[in-house]
Image (cartoon, rainbow over the protein chains, first blue to last red):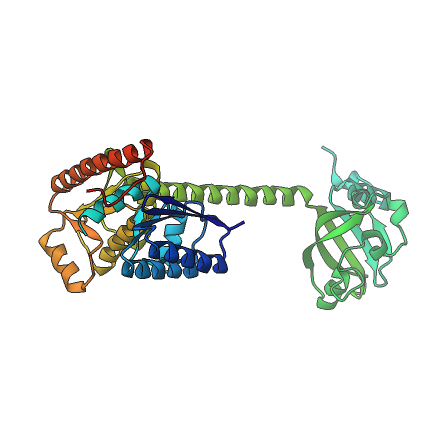
Length: 120
Length: 298
């Protein structure tokens, strides 16, 4: 079983990450998203991380890199559902994830993707 | 009243007096043989005077200093003066704390021939001391607890997070902001965001007299934290002095929307929320109607 699931909602890719995702799975997921977007299956990518109890710098780094690459592919990444402890740890480590966008939950992420596409 | 001279001061009478004393008294020779012990002393080791007589004192009392160089008798004889101390003796396997005094015993020529010791059971006193110490510690602990509680209370009072509108939180900061307070404010803002699902946080620093680079950084960090949760931060109440400090320190406030007054910030946030609501409606409709969500619709 993969520790993540990917759904297509029209041209939005909804990715849900499970708690026990490891470094190898992250790379698999990255490739998967990148390919899907390349096939025109995702103008916006929502990554739901509400199940994560910790986000290590490796995952943060990869999400950042993914966002940068997807921008080159004319797509955007919104991270949804970061919890307070995770946010506090990220800040303690000085990780601000400047290139990423965030939303409280998937619903808000959908709204966000809709808005910002109209006024790029 | 009888004249003292009428009393017969014989040996029997003296031993009566000694036996009537409630502290333990015993006499040993230089070889640790017990020459005499009173009733109270024998009772303290669970014996009668007869059972103790002519036995070695270290067998009867068995204290930690017995048969060592610190033997109280030896000390008293060596120093030729009284020797005080506290120790424990053993009575039927249980320990009894005692306080003792030893004095050298001389014969009529003035030669030291042994040692006189008197001792009392101090179990009760130690117990009382222990209780006093315990109560003192308890009191100190309680006071520390109270102080900590008050500190927490003050922290909480000084950083209230108020939901003034559905989806809008305000954090009116008043007083000096140190890093501890700023950190707790940040934590409370994040918790409030998670609870209320707020889209905007308005931080008002009208009531903060001094803002240095450190405070500005704390505010910025709160904004960064809020951003990670998908919430926008607005900053209001920046006076000319504070504006100068922030611009001089070169801190990047890109993640913060700056508004002059609280009312401006509220107006901005509310109008944004309205727009959002419309869009949310649209998204819900799209999902609800079973049509695929398309971002390129309009």
